[in-house]
Length: 403
Image (cartoon, rainbow, N blue to C red; front, side):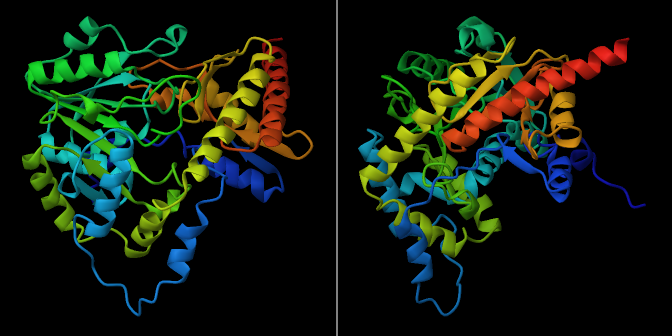
């Protein structure tokens, strides 16, 4: 057997897709699986986006510019201006999804052995991106009981050392739904400037805010231009997850030039996906207003249903379309596997995302799951009922095992 790299062997498995094999087996047995494990919206993409692809007169698919088509970057700059984020097309580098965007950024600012600080729980794949770049994740714990608000500044400050190259967070947060306030973002910007490090903010859920609060973009801070980076994507905003189109936005010219070298290595972003993404930006305001309202409705339905389940605690997300639920089990991953392998109700079951994979600290999130409210309200109510019945059945089996 030829040698495999330590990097690949130690790369963490995605908790979002870790149980897919059991889901596939359940489906093969004829069981309908209600997916609450992954942020794949079921809301239709803007019709113009898909029509633009269908009506494209291309007779071949040529390479495009490595940084993305200028017309698309100009449209993105106008989109950001509507959100009080003043950037030019030259501040934007288009990527093959937000995943590539973060991979490029980590490789552009970090060397092997460097560190990034992330409030946890955090988007599980951040661990993988960091590992692939030989970068160490230094977690700072956010508490369930505080709805995962930003940890105390001293807790973050004490983690910064000579190897620290950035603070990374998702706003609104995946997996918690927490929305960092203007005060919190400003505090982090000032901390980054004072230590001469980067503040990288994944803002792919920017529009999805629940309640009377405002999303404050890191690029709106007046003093952080050289130190701040946005990671963004069309995936969630326009239900174009499969398009794999994201971008990096920064006013740091040297960083953009460094990033462009990595973009050159993969030649260009995907042509058809860019066509769809550019057309999506022309969607009327009513499109996103309708999407936001629908997620707000689903949030209310799901949270109320989960709160009716005995011994289940649930976070109250301020944004995005996820929540964290604490379950009355010792091992949420074992329970999630049980739902797929050994339980069904009326030929249906539920797939969850065990929360341990959203933490870097060993042992954290053991009894928690991330739940995505990306199904319609009727299906969410049904999923919550299956979860309740599944918990009851699981606890009964555990008690019988002890007897």
